[in-house]
Length: 416
Image (cartoon, rainbow, N blue to C red; front, side, top):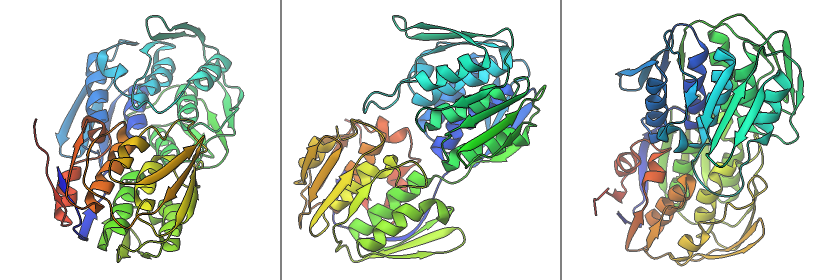
């Protein structure tokens, strides 16, 4: 429940990156030893992966708030077909991790947010190139992989894919020889996953560029690692500050990761001040229209697209937002229209006519980032907003209502 129109002021500390931790937890399966993962976000996707690893035979427990211990020494099960696997998209990283460790894996098809076709064909193509035989049982929603041996090779990804890049890295860590991934994705969480694997003894070079080389090693050992800050969570609070007005200091971030958003907020009339590990956003709430196109990193993130549409709905003029990553990520638009947003969709292009005032509405979160967009719209609208399906928001935002309340928002979680 949100009572809108309060300016936001103060500091917000950003949690560990969801998109990194959901790859790093499965990566810990490959190690023969204990891994300590710090700066862990308290989100639902982490709880699902923790439950999955326990069912596979690992010891996986929180040793304090924000720190997870994973001991995979006695893990002896490659059959990951539990309900917890089906609930999140990133469970497909279990394929690469289990295949690396056991040369065999049986994994339920992933779930997560539904905003268009999100095939895993590039992942499977890479696994086959490394030597795996794959059985795709779509009737039962299970993928089975098996290899007598994994052998390094040259893999060209037909399209830039974060998931396929990470999954290929995971599978190739223990493969014989050298694996080269060409047309690799460059997102910060790919670099973070590679850094974690290297801490465990892997030999990965080039993460963050479009060519990654993995020299296979015989085994990985345990390590302690700190997750990078969440680029998307940081961006969500930056957009909220821009729309609501006020002065918000977004702390514990890597400002370089925010360059594409910072540039757009400046175009929209905000003052953006960067420090070593923080960004201050200062806004009077009067925004100007702009044009945005989502692209692979370092371009504007598709995971900030719904939040930006909510923000542009109150900008003066006509904004154009083009979605180039997912073909159906505008499913939430009907929910935004309930606030009085004036948005038209033509294929992958949203035309947003800014309005001077939004009004509170009763809406549903249709996916994780769409849920964040509903929160931003509610914060900037007159009256009361009620958002349902907050389980989606909990998948990627730690204590969102507490962090916003500390900035001055009138927001609370209620049970029906």
